[in-house]
Length: 249
Image 1 (tube, rainbow, N blue to C red):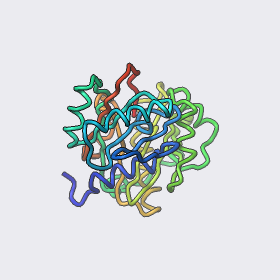
Image 2: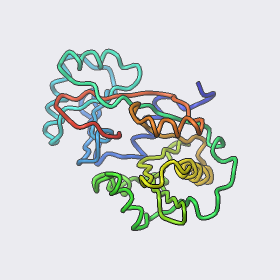
Image 3: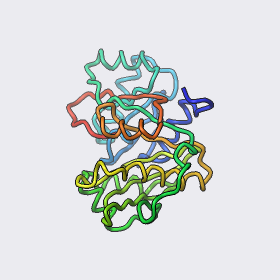
Image 4: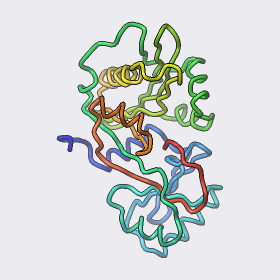
């Protein structure tokens, strides 16, 4: 366990602020998110206060009225909610870890020249790389509406544009999202340098921690973050009532 690391509430607030939903709606004990096609993380409902089993149908109805399938995020320790949803026929999808490190863990060496840059607004080639990696316009809109301190990440290797990403800060926590390396440039160490670039930028903005969210199934990304000493500090998964494709959250 990381010493003096942010608590669960701080981490999940940072997730909400650095990768924001289109709208947040409080309904009884629930916090509903309107995702507008931007993925599970910004479409899932969470419990904000004590709830009762009879509160679940109202949450389901509210999500359907928003044009979304019933979807809940289950954060570490929310066993009762997880079991109640399982009993209602919800499937468990996308177990995800939150990885974190003190910012100085990634700011201990200079970046090689013309390797990684912190840039906002994103360059056209950065949008091309995101598109190649499957990041659709709805997720681009998530970055655009983020009002927290933010930057794009642009990586080059072998004198070619090769990677892109996004980083934003809330309450001292910098989170890297949508990190994408072109397939023919993977395995060259660029992802690590881009994470270091994010950390250097975030440190200048006052961040004390840097982290990323990654599904347990993403072995490549988990290997990268583990090599950079980003430790698992919390977990979450989803419960969904209808069939849906698993995607990076």
